[in-house]
Image (cartoon, rainbow, N blue to C red; front, side, top):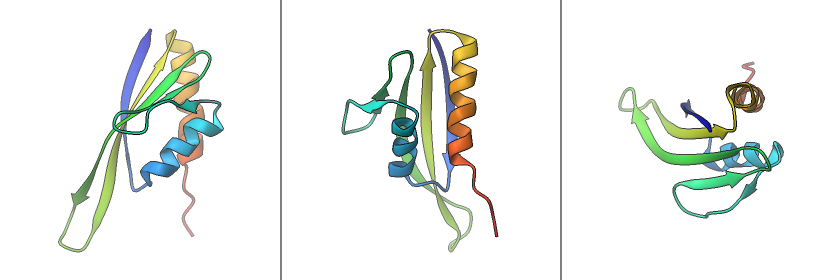
Length: 90
């Protein structure tokens, strides 16, 4: 099994979980680490914390672990997940 951990900032933890579900996973735990399982891969939301850049500017930071059977499937999972997290400014 291959595994990789990434940090996502400024995206609500519930939305990050929803993205796993949109990719075909099912939530199997309801506390940290939130675990999502699909047929060939799984993902975990490990932690969430608030980061303060200034006294006014604060964002959340969420640690996520991706697990897949091999490197190519892991990279495909991460690519698809990152596509879901893309934000277009306006």
